[in-house]
Length: 160
Figure 1 (cartoon, rainbow, N blue to C red):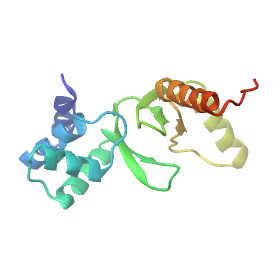
Figure 2 (cartoon, rainbow, N blue to C red):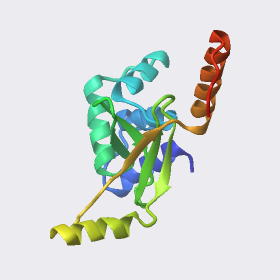
Figure 3 (cartoon, rainbow, N blue to C red):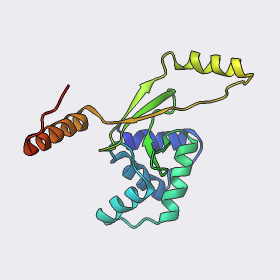
């Protein structure tokens, strides 16, 4: 099943109607790569000559977030974006701060550490999330190449 189908199935499983507008937002979300904003979805809709309103996109994103089909990312810039997720699997995100590519990362030992932190401070942890931002391998390679090219152009030597 494709991503659009999984999003629509999640809506229907939760008892929501897959209205034409929700289907449209599902298609726009499924067509994104990496993280995206509501503005990105509106722009994609405009480019594809689809008539969808801003409020419709925000309402649909709120619903998809509640259903855990998408997760909201709080970006280092203070703004936020969304990323498509598997609602049945707890995970965290690696997000490229350059190109926006994102990857799901399994919980691993973090769940044990979260429980330990909660225990030490007297909390019963109900939920947690973690977003790690940096450069993906492709952007890191490009940044290194660009830095090397700039160094070569100035005649300066890079010391390792």
